[in-house]
Image (cartoon, rainbow, N blue to C red):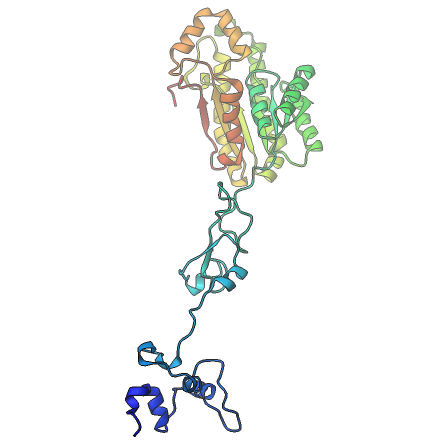
Length: 388
């Protein structure tokens, strides 16, 4: 007598022996059982035909859904994953929404690349779409600095040279100008000299034209030159009209000429115009009326021009520095008590360095890091001026 079917056969095999289909679905039935005119060989997947060849004991049978399909080896994704992903890929089960799969690394992506090849997390192997790219260094800029044979102008030129920029020294004294250009080369930049007397309106325009004839672009213009009479304290009643006119020519008329000549080039490069003003233009200085007057006018000129040129992407800013310069040293010699007054109101109790303090602040305003700064006067004076 045959043993009860329930003790030896699974529910699906029992149904097949009674005459019904062993598996649900046409495709599975064809795979597991021979069709018309076809030999009864097992299909590529485990079906009824395979089950007839091998019936496991009840203790080894699978339970639950899919029990009739037999046993199989667990699937390992490591082989095909390694062929598709770099060595530094870490699999993750997170799936992205369909609309976001393309931006996350391709169709149906389930893997994220975590760069862990080196201590600095830099690895040249990655997916087609890079997750994080290191920003490239700022391209070499071309700037011109007036009055750069010494003092603050020289410090600005050297600070820009440290960034690898092309720096044009616009000055009257050729020997000193070429020496500063050589110093710019020594710190990693490209120094050039162009003859320019900013007191002569035509000379300032010609200097810009000369620079544009040698360079393909112009990114920054720094008007640093001041009158040689600036540090000399004189009562207004004793100031000759010619001296007052010299202040105006160097500080204002030269600024106007430089701005007019360089505007189109600055517009093309989205560049910057930078002025060197003074705290005297904010709070005034006794016996420095002409100097304080033109420095205050420079600040107003810069703010107005920033509003006018802003629509063209050109920025205009000012710096009010307090630094140890030859001009400041001459002023201290003429008025020994002036040193105590200047340092006494300075919270840092020192004068700024032309390169490390003033020059680097100027380089910031000329760089792309200050692309959202315009119409501003930056006080680089150690906190001496409380007006701003």
